[in-house]
Amino acid sequence: MTGQRRAALAALVLASVLAACGTDQTRLETGREATAEVKTLLTGLFHRGPKVAAPDPQVIAREALNANAGPLILVSLEATKSTSVFALRGENNGMRTWLSPAGQGVITRGGVLAGTRGFGNDMMSSDIGPMIAAVQGRRAQKLKIELRYLDGLGKERPLPLDCSSGTAAATGYDFAGMQFSGTPVAVHCEGYGFSFDNSYIVANSGTILASRQWIGPRLGYLTLQSLRN
Image 1 (cartoon, rainbow, N blue to C red):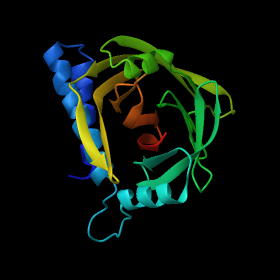
Image 2 (tube, rainbow, N blue to C red):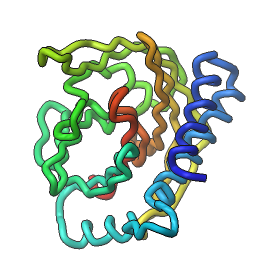
Image 3 (spheres, rainbow, N blue to C red):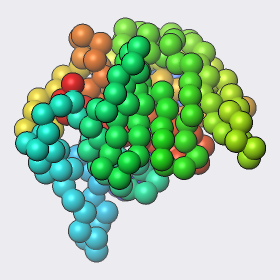
Image 4 (cartoon, rainbow, N blue to C red):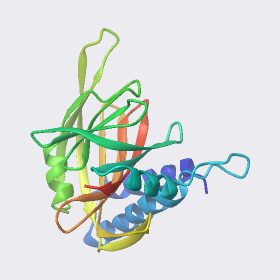
């Protein structure tokens, strides 16, 4: 199954389940889907078929860890199937800015995507406090957030969204010679004709270990794996 089909399947399952705010068993199944999706994306999203020699993300991660001493994340943009290691370049009031060798930027707050730079059609800013609390706290609840994008005149326009989160039992996986374990958290959001489904694996400390998060309607999803905090 291709990465694109896996993403579509996960979106269908999560949207139908989380939007309904179902039972504990429903949230359990949703969390299992989220866990499987993140783990599959981490190990298989970057495989483009036998006709294209794609770099192994685990090799990329190991080489980056050996060459750099600071915090690192592995980032894949699904729309372009591009994969790169982003290094921490700044931190201010809980906002962390990560830069790739090509100069693209990912901004996270508590491990949740808060903005992007250099991709085109970027998420310029956001109010995501309730989502951060739900994900880090590994809670099932309803919440509201706001994402902002530039319009044709260069002015930031808000996209307010209603969201629901769900969780499941803890899980574990290996990546680039490291072991990770945490609680799967799935978040479904919708508003103004848009909808998306984010998936997270969260450690007991609240640290987000791996995630698949929506940037916006044109860029789609990023997959992020923490390599070194």
